[in-house]
Length: 144
Image (cartoon, rainbow, N blue to C red; front, top):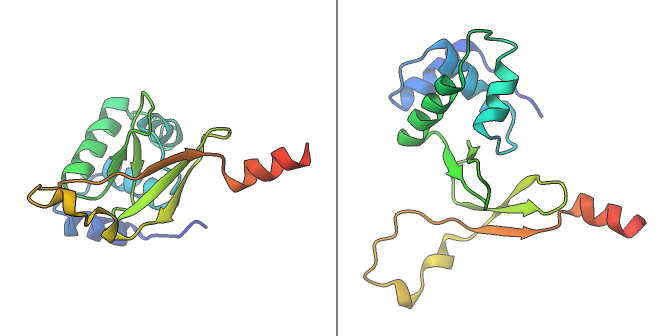
C-alpha cells in the first residue's frame, strides 16, 4: 500500500535524522518508504532514473551510505552480491524465498539474543535471516 508523503514530511524526516534534504535524498527516501521490498541500489536507481534523468548510481550509493550512517536504513546481504536496503530499522527477521527471490519481514523477540553464552560480549548488530519458500510459491507448487 503506497502512502502519499508531502515534500515537507520527507524533508522533516531527513532533518530529524540530521540529514540535509536534497532532491535525490528526498526521492530515495520516498521510494524506500513506498516500496518496502528490500530493494537494491540498482532497483532504486532504475526506478528513479525516469524521474531524475541526471541521476547517477554513485549518487544513489552515496545517499544509501549516508542513510545507513544516520540510522535511516539497514543493509542486508542475504547471501547476495548486492546489498538490499530496509527502511524498517526496528528489530525483526527476514525470510528470503528461494524461488521468487522476495524478502519478507517477520517479528522476532529481542530476547532471542539474551543467552548466557554471550554475557560479557558487546553485541553491535543482529541479523536473523531465514531461507526457504514463501507462502505464495509454496501454494503454486501444491497446485502443480
